[in-house]
Length: 112
Length: 521
Image (cartoon, rainbow over the protein chains, first blue to last red):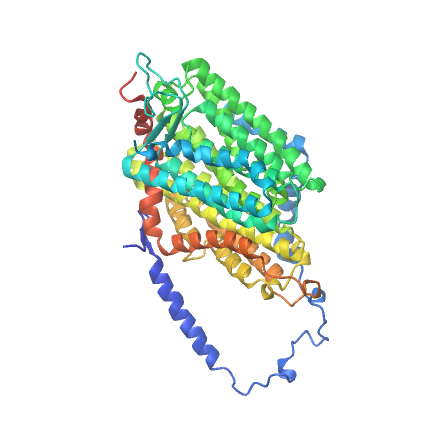
């Protein structure tokens, strides 16, 4: 077989998944076809709902910037991120320090 | 005489010729230089594919430089090799093919991506010098030569990372990489010195044959492991990665992904073929596993908070290297126990080696799409992007494929290698698989962020005149996309014809030694 991968703990068949995605796609298209046919293009039905506010002309004024993504996740892990960002100082002597530190720790573990 | 016996030498000679003749080709104008770059890249890839085909058919190839006969590894009267020997088994050839495909894609992409800059003959010379260094590391059977090729690759990388020398950030990134890289190269050289002092040989097979663990061997092992894990961007020595990957031109970053795999190759050649069962304790395997776990988690959590697209992808490189280290660490853990190797060790190794192939392809493609975004929008800051799928439909399509593959979404290739890694590492210690799964979820979250902020959203006025990436850049991205789709559709063929032979070659230390040493010693 060209599609089955045996892992020693079970198997995985890519073609089964492709069939699954094919059937899912047909279902999605069928659901979409059940939508209202009396939709009127060019009327207010066509306008974006922007929290009852006027829609800005430029997309720059309404996009969510990348730095705001997952703010809750980052806020929840603030202590972790504070220490992590501090380690990533961008100072080359720190890079060398981590290298030497790792070498020293591994040397102790291997030599003892 | 069959010319194919010279394939190992040709795999190094062709890119080296490409490097030294680039300034001459540059005299003929841009079209001649571009044609030369394409010709050399295709020829190198073809040679590596032929090499893999021959190794899979006939077993380990050796090529003795400067000998009367190309396969005379032990001249009469000598019990160990004295000449430079290229030694290519299925793992070396596999890595050479993976690296050369990344180099081919990067070369096509660079043709138009770099078109508006000057000094391109120097660029292509350094590019092929980097390819030579990468392939040399993967094909040599000699420790000192490994160091030489490592240095060739490093020096070429310094120049390429700082290629946009009007950007202070690029010069700074190159300087940082130079400092840390030179330090690690010295460690490698000292380690080679230790082994040469003990065994009077630098050939990997010869040293492996005589290896007995003492203090000198242990110190050499520590120096090699630390240096090579640093070179492939492992936590806590990964900090150079986002600097270097972000500042290098996109085609070069794609190649740097392949070059980092050459260091990974060196690490596993040292652990499996040089030391192998002589490793003794489980300290080194567990150290590699722990470094892998840290790399996975710290890499991906740092990626989530990035707003600069190439830095984000660079942190993902750290994370993906973690998967490979963890898998091959588990394989190393089982090296002295045939039952453990049969139960989970070999599956872990197959997963790790499969992930090397997958990672190089989709990460190379992701860096190229980041380059295409920069080319069209003039920015690498995700906060300034948006709505670019409207003007870059082909790039968007290829980005989605690469992002789905790296996130391990079925049925893409990344899922298959990750599945093998999850299941085999679970058998050793379930927490390893849990960390790998959490990392995969965060990887998906991170690339959803890139997709949403760069490609989706309303159209931006400032991108009114932005256009799709030009032809050669699309060709470069398409090469990697086609490989990813092919691996996705035919995982069994990939595993049985490419990955399993490579994994078997890596665990077969006796086979590696006997190819050079024969019945000697």
